[in-house]
Length: 150
Image: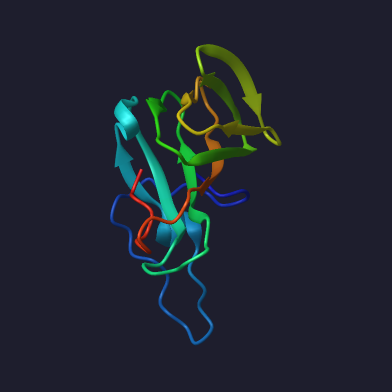
């Protein structure tokens, strides 16, 4: 998992750069957390929940925004949600998308809408390149509670 123009640091637990007055968190260095077997998928991807609907936010339909990096060979397992609509925007890389019983190739720039109650999953079948993904989830607010972690 590497940022564009950022060398991979193979040492686990390497501390981030010393904080400075204007230090800004870096997605790749500071925020992405490992997530093993996401929805029953293979391997470990790295994800950051950039936004979650706050509790008691009436009228807000955006439930969450995730940024995810799927290393080669990893996947988001085939799964189904409820009445939410989850959109995948492929930012970088390519993979094999499963959507409602069909499989097809996706690549950077593709937008896949996973409709409510639909079945979907994504595999990074590349031998060498990470797949970068933005996930937008829209769900009706229920009792003013935040969206469930999916």
